[in-house]
Length: 341
Image 1: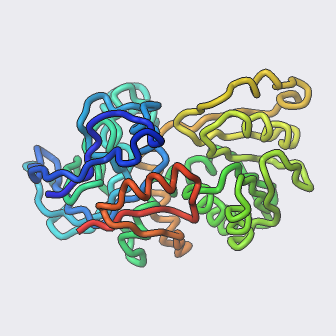
Image 2: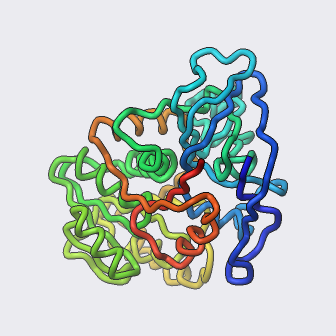
């Protein structure tokens, strides 16, 4: 099978072709696993973090990709509810132990044995991949494979972030950064919360215009002040300064949710943190870590109900490096998706 493989960590400015097109044997599903013939895989900023060593794979080589859509091509021993031909999706959560205090309390995203698709196990930048049947999800009708792919990470993690924000009807929501996840959160918020307005902070004029097209009532740079204080803000940026900026824009009792797997760059902005301005008045700061299977299932149901249509840019599997370079450069409108096979 064809696969785009990461053989060594590198910076994209030094190596603009970090993934190599490689011929690999088709994997064989183990007990309670399925073999998925991949048709589409979303491209996520987390792949940049893997490639550049901020959240490195535990071993190399590895096949990246954790927003996977395809059809069951074969099943291993013990598989019960999935059959050959079923359309399924695979998300960031490849597996968890199922026995620890976090798994038993519905917080498998915090499991110490959490295995991430495309980082800790081979993912979807390939024609085939294997996964446990309990970590594959039926894809609702109404979505093409390319449209369904970003639902599995950008959408699901956005859903978890929105839920953790505590937003209620009529409250004002801010979104810092406007990539694949934030554009779906905007659509979800407008659908699910009556009278709630969405304000977007984005670095480029094109992203701000896109946000307005999707229904944002205001869009500006992260350093600009919106016309109102905001009840909740979700930050999806990979850097520190927007965190401090967002805290200053929160209403009393507001909550900032950081939806990022890491933060990089200059930490000096944190020294500007002023307690009365940024944290007093019972403001809250919360992070998002991974997703659970329940998040994916709940979000796919919501997406089908609201007929959510992600904006996607499609690339061939062999163009994965180009898609990653555009993501690195901030050339974003919706989500980037690899079409495979």
